[in-house]
Length: 268
Ligand SMILES: Cc1cc2nc3c(=O)[nH]c(=O)nc-3n(C[C@H](O)[C@H](O)[C@H](O)COP(=O)(O)O)c2cc1C
Image (cartoon, rainbow, N blue to C red):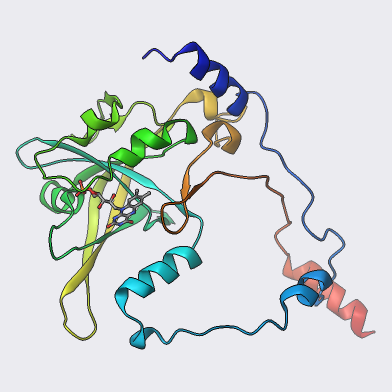
């Protein structure tokens, strides 16, 4: 695939393959056991009252607006499937997470509009196969167009201009432009129902990851992990908003032995 010169320049500045992820200091490096939140943060927001929603008194539209802005940022599964007649389908889904690494499982949840079930859901339930591809900022618009609510016969790949790459373990293609693609088999499906009407509102799907493909240019030096700067993944916020990664910081995982010693020291 050919990238234009301007895109290559842009890409070179945004995804410098050799530059590591930018790590900053944690927000409070001198934090002590039991210290709680930062003082300035508490002064600013600690006593601001909280508005409360009682969820069984909140209509689904408002619940959607609220929760999709509360649970952020969400990663996005860019899902490629095939209909039973072989029609390819591509669409993004942000009700998406890692479930376990042993076995390697991911989850995606499909909302069911009474008007039209999502083609991706139908295809996964029928064929039991799909690929999950990771979207980078550099092709956000091409990925976004595939969310168009169109008839099952429409091939979103054509609208996007993205490229199919053959998979190894499953029939649906991978997205060649994606730095990461995961070939998946349906492991489990569960319909979620409205608590009063019992109508199906969502279907939760677990996918068993059979094979992961990662572009070598986004791998770290020993090839075992992905460099987030080079990956430059797109995330979903509420409404129409997307986000990209900012800086990161490390905080050591607490060891009970060290914490216990510190508590003992304080008690004496
Ligand atoms: C970034 C993004 C995230 C989305 N996440 C979801 C989701 O998690 N669940 C869902 O049902 N629809 C989600 N949608 C909407 C679907 O992508 C949209 O309904 C699409 O038309 C489904 O395509 P399909 O019918 O070909 O499967 C999302 C749309 C966008 C743009």
